[in-house]
Amino acid sequence: MILEESFIEHNLDSAQHQTNSNFWLPLTRYNTLTPAPPTVQSKMPSKTQMPTPLSPSASKWDGQTKMLRNFLRIVEQLFRLAEILDDRQKLDWLISYVEADIADQWSSFPEFETGPWNQFLDRLKIEYPELTSEEQGTMG
Image (cartoon, rainbow, N blue to C red):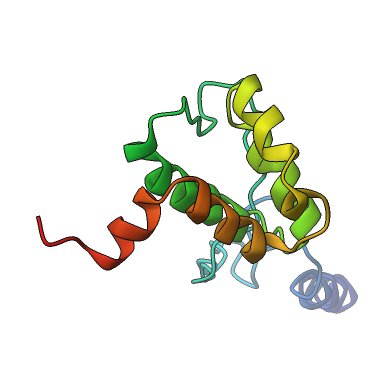
């Protein structure tokens, strides 16, 4: 009988150090289930994927100049969430979210082929002066 008790004690002690794939820890000495401690959520958002260009969740720009600034902000936020740092990838994603004729025009800019993201944005400010006036404000 003593051997049986020590065998059970030994197995219970070793069971406490094993992991379980459920939310529960192994049985304790008292043969009850103990819930696992709650996990601590990271304050940093996890990496997300860029929306597919033709999906309903994708940001789109239809050519209305007054919406361009907002569109660019949304796309830049998506880049941050998806952890896209490469300028070439940013430019390719950007033109995938605009209409075909706009994509053709933007991809013909020399800044699209050679320049980094910021130079391309500067080119857009030249092509769409409303972007600069929105940044600086106007007297009206």
